[in-house]
Length: 446
Image (cartoon, helix red, strand yellow):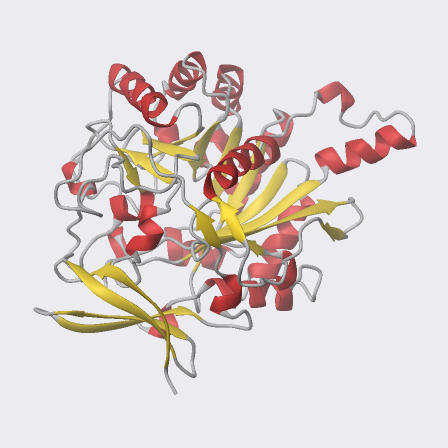
């Protein structure tokens, strides 16, 4: 028998009109079911696996925006900027410094190189930093694209952000240039680069050929080794696509552990269908968060258990999971987090969750170890503290939404915001969402 889990609002994937939606539990899993008066019914698998959706969801004390940059006219999600209906502050702000790229990937949020070339000036980028600060104060910054390292002045952009008071600045990169050009990477490090968010889809070149169009494993390893040389923490970021690399999840985790402490963690992204891949997917084309957690446990042979991966306290609980571990260097992961049983009456403070999320990323994704102390330890207590400090390793995932599975409640809780050309802050998923024809609500305006 079908069971109604909850009601929400969504978008029609053909016209992006706001429509009612319901989470319906069936034998196979939980589906988002919605009906557009013009285009009919759409049904998308959103949750499947051992973890029950009711046991996963958090109740939250909402953190409404106190100084909105845009007013409400049409209502969510058409007035983003952020508006007063938004329920979470910015944890990470994305600045797209170019739409150019040195790859042409089959899966690309930004549809890089498909549209007219655009690269904001340094003056415009300074304005973006100011707008972020005005809206959300000091938060974590990710410089993205396209491919940000195609810009020769990326170091100068990092310096601008540092001068504005932003302490954690990360680049989202495919790693090609930082693997080939050590001097460029050193320049970024000297400018104040905190972390590298490295696109990494697997340990087999066949995977890279399928997703990125060419063999890239050797170039990824070069990028990692250069980050080791210059003491820059990095996170491996695989997009997980059923039938392409979902068999390789355990091997990716083991690969990451080989390069600790420089590799600070692995951040999975279940595939979303927007941007360059705005076609209508089937259930077999998706992998939900509980399925991903189950595969992690299975493919690591229980070294990482699903119970050590928990819902976030910052964004909506249906968006992500995270787990903290200590790696002792002897191929053993010690869990530092464990999921707690929900009693149905517990609540999470969204403001507190945002503060914790910002600190977690800034502290754990950055490699903050003086080179001269990396292998020199004092007494046994110092050794233990040092092991915990540098041995931290995170396993996390973010399930971005597309026009088929978008939930407006999740959009309102989003803490990852893209800065638009006008200087408004747009929740990441709604910024990138495209209809089946590739048209968007916000990205096309850039």
